[in-house]
Amino acid sequence: MKDNIIIRFEHVTKQYDNDPPVLNDVCFEIERGKFYTLLGPSGCGKTTILRLIAGFIGPSQGNIYFNGKIINHVPANKRQVNTVFQDYALFPHLNVFENVAFGLRIKKLKNAEITEKVKEALRFVNLKGYENREISEMSGGQRQRVAIVRAIVNEPEVLLLDEPLSALDLKLRTEMQYELRELQRRLGITFIFVTHDQEEALAMSDEIFVLNNGKIEQSGTPTDIYDEPINRFVANFIGESNIVSGKMIKDYVVEFAGKTFDCVDKGFNPNETVEIVIRPEDLEITPKDQGKLQVRIDSQLFRGVHYEIICYDQDGNEWLVHSTRKVKVGDEIGLHFDPEAIHVMRLGETEEEFDKRLENY
Amino acid sequence: MRNTSRNFYLIPYVLWIILFVVTPLFLVLYYSFFDIEGHFTLDNYKKFFTTVYLGMTLSSFWYAFLITLFTLIIAYPTAYLLTKTKHKQLWLLLIILPSWINLLLKAYAFLGIFGTYRAANSFLKMIGIGSKQLLFTDFSFIFVSVYIFLPFMILPIFNALNELNPSLVDAAHDLGGSSWTTFRRVIFPLTLDGVKSGCQVVFIPSLSLFMLTRLIAGNRVITLGTAIEQHFLVTQDWGMGSTIAVFLIIAMVIIMIVTGKKVVSKVL
Image (tube, rainbow over all chains, first blue to last red; front, side):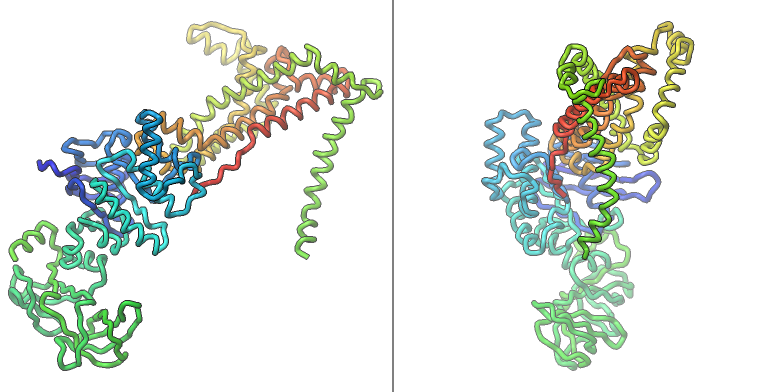
């Protein structure tokens, strides 16, 4: 086994009573020192994975390895991981200092050492001087930081973050995204971050696991997942997409919307039915006769950085376009796109088959 | 307009308080300054500070303390287990149910159970300990009192435990706390308010128990409650009875202040 793997899930299933499984036969590996994100809609099993790693629950089937050893039955208080909880779970009867010192006191460190470590850690997240504050006197963003410090002061090998930014307002959330990313680089430990916010995931992660219905749909770097989504679910969940069905005529040639187009995909059966993804920002508005597709503009919405334009082709397919140019509703226009902008998805393909096919390109 | 109508709704409440709380309190205070013949005197207060009454006070506090202690020792784990059960509201109801039965009925039931030739002694014989005098002992007095007060202690502790944010317990485990450390440093401190109100509801009535002391303890345990009852109903010395009542009220007020809820600002 590679020794840079810190956590490994081997066919892990989690099921309560006779309900459908929350996690269904999940396998993955987590490397040391990287920023991972578990991304998916609510109920997809991402928090369950986090709780399994933390040790609050145990798997129904399968094994969880930590540094090569099975930890299925190791209780939470004996694991080298710490958690930042969604509601922060700060102890309301203790002040900031005692909250941060909680783990250190359990380790029975000397008082002087505890004081030094807590002060140092608070300075690390710009909370110097807040030691004697009560938790109720802290703002949301400050509580967030106390929760992070309380976890990292114990020097865990893995830090688990359960939607820690979801309670913050937009501006603070963006700020904290930078801070967390920066923090992970400075500490050099593994972060496993749970979120349902795809922008957050794309901005922060080295690696993203997209989950749905207790299964990992796709894993990869943010660009991999954005540019090469494996299926309709991932394409829809990560960013906005135009998804139309089509036919792969042969390698590098695909047919959709009643026309054939050059593309960069291959390895399909001749005339195989496929789904086509084109991102709205890859569509370029041209005069009607110059575009690869001819569409009629149905509506237009100003979004600040761009106009969100919805058009329909003669087959009734909907096309979402992001453009900085204003258009007129009801006009007929052309849409231009590069062969690289076309992403072809095979129906019902598993991640292994998908990876294999990509390697053959 | 709104203020006047609000004041209007307050009238029944204020009337009730004046008639049945404030007036009796003043009456008790008033009577405590008169002797048995109706002459104004401070003798009652002097008498209270003699060994007889101080001993009685001490014994009242001692028994009330024991009752509260044993009730707490039984109630806390019970309440904790209750919060872990699947149908916790049902179990809670079953535990509270006996408190709806009249106290006297329960006392008479125990007279039956604890009698020399009754169930409890049969059981003792069966397990080889042999027949024992159970009724009219400290043991039976405290046992029955604990039984009667148990629901009143369980309820506030159960509520406190039930309101405890479970992720705080997870957090304590996550930070390396064993089950015991988690209990000692997180669960117990955060349910202390429940424990305090439980102790209040048990300790204060225990101070003035008098039916149980007569029925179950056979008047071998004399508390302030017994003394008040005797003075009002037997010796007809209302002055002395009132004086004891005044001290009892003072004690209760002190207890309520000491165990009173500290305003803990709740987080989340």
